[in-house]
Amino acid sequence: MHEVQYKLVKCTINGRPVQTMVDVRASLTDMLRNDYRLTSVKKGCEVGECGACNVLIDGECFNSCIYLAVWAEGKNIRTLEGLLGPNGELSDIQQAFIDETAVQCGFCTPGFIMTAVEILETGKEYTRDELRKLLSGHLCRCTGYENIINAVENTMHKRLAAKK
Figure (cartoon, rainbow, N blue to C red):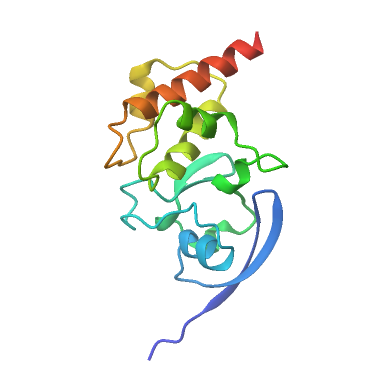
């Protein structure tokens, strides 16, 4: 008979220091959803193929379904919930998804937006083809991708223009 092992994980989630006792076999998706009720982190394929569970870990996007919760020790994790402003206002990229009608059922949207945040925070200008490649780790069954790319591209151009 195998005994379940638990480990205390201390990390920062959306700017808040937290600590949780987790099953050493649990995914980061499970910890974020079950222990912190961060339901923007979707359970899609659970094998790292669809991108629905994407979160930023120390500024880099990861599929949280194949990232063990214990690996989050000391890390800074951001989910879609962490993008909201102090009064619940949407971030520019969230608003762009609405403006560009880049959302239909919405299941894949949080993962796409978190990847977009990683892209946008580089401060670089990407071509449309480069954006398409950078967003290729996501599956969407409803929108047809073009509006999603439009949302990311328009936000990128607005941010770059604001820097000048």
